[in-house]
Amino acid sequence: MNMQIIQIGQIVVSVLLMATILMQNRGSGTGGVFGGGSDVFRAKRGAEVFLFRATIVLATIFIGLAIVGLLISSNKLS
Image (cartoon, rainbow, N blue to C red; front, side):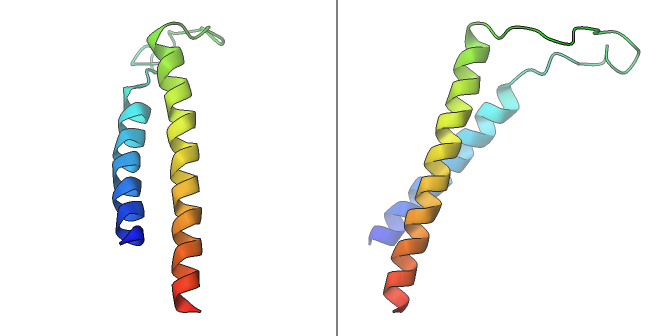
């Protein structure tokens, strides 16, 4: 039962992680293709900061769940 909860958690976290990654705006758009968009550095503001931090938190949770799942499955095999 514990392994099922971890697997469901991994699925939920992975979907949220993909959503936060896809929602981040890189700012290059099509302007970068045609020589525009010369901004090398741009400060993150508002929602960008939230998405950036949420991505880090979700990635950490995902890695933690993967390690816990690995430990639980290796204990069951022993």
